[in-house]
Amino acid sequence: MMHELIINWVIAMSPPPSQGGGQQGPGMLLSFVIPMVFVGLIFYFVLIKPQKKQHQEVQKMRDSLEEGASIITTGGIHGVVKKVKDDIVTLQIADNVRIKVNRTSIGTIKE
Image (cartoon, rainbow, N blue to C red; front, side, top):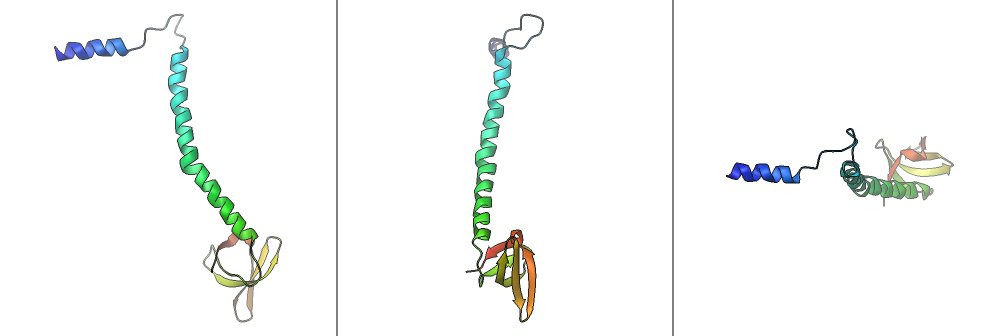
């Protein structure tokens, strides 16, 4: 009894056989495209948009570098900005010890 109900339900819910030599109808295309669009939107709002926002904040922080700021590089070097010229930042990491690093290697500004 229960098996017959399940079989009848599966038959009723299955799509009708395609007519015209095996061509797929628009229903098959939509059943694939709609979930893919939904997955794409999820990826955008969960992964891409927050990453883009974080990248913009880091870029803004690096653009606002000024002389005298205490920073930490992405490699973990602590120093004080002595000179900023284009993409090169000169850091003083100890007495009479200065190094040049790329602006992109600045990780954080210490407050």
